[in-house]
Length: 259
Ligand code: NAP
Image (cartoon, rainbow, N blue to C red):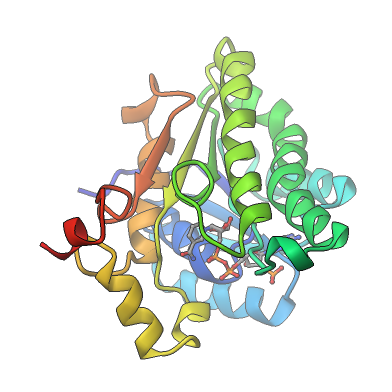
């Protein structure tokens, strides 16, 4: 059953496409007023047009980068201007460029950590006063199974950043518990997004073969987990990481995944 979040003010960073757009859609379907952010204006306009047909909630966008403290402060101000409050921050924006260790540059490393880890911190810090005022404040991070649970050659910087998000989450959850703000993380497995479609059918088939449920996840699967963490039903859950991966991390061996 869809949770009703009518009247909630929600921000989703990195929501012009992919998982963030799916999270935003789930909140719109739950009745929330959603501010989506990203840097690509054409994609943001298209996203909001798509979400607007999915009511009963509403969606609008604001351009900005999670790597900019000024942009994150502006994001919080605009959410309050448009919705009067901030109840939920979904810190979702992330990048995952491939680089093996032998050729990885400092710039590669810094780009991933600046977006995926510092970006979480800046978004959370800017929204904290309003999340505190809300009385039902929720922070939902998009981490990954890669890093916290598994490894993937070519993504050591990414895996490190996704694990770092969970370290941030645990201390933030303690610091913010007395304000009734919860901080949790969704760990997506392999999710079907626009970007994945470009990689072709063979790639998709090889990924599906490693997932006990035999299919990639959908952005709606991740959106449902984010809505759950934001809902009153989850008000006593904080500092937790929830893998949403069709069982991908479970097999001990290749043969175990082939049953
Ligand atoms: P995606 O399709 O590439 O979308 C990434 C989103 O982040 C875009 O909306 C992009 O918007 C935004 N973004 C990137 N850098 C940004 C910045 N500096 N400031 C603001 N927005 C920024 O990626 P995705 O697959 O949906 O991934 C979303 C999150 O899920 C990431 O944290 C990723 O690590 C995580 N994840 C994905 C998968 C998967 O299978 N897809 C699995 C595990 C975890 P603009 O281009 O408009 O800036």
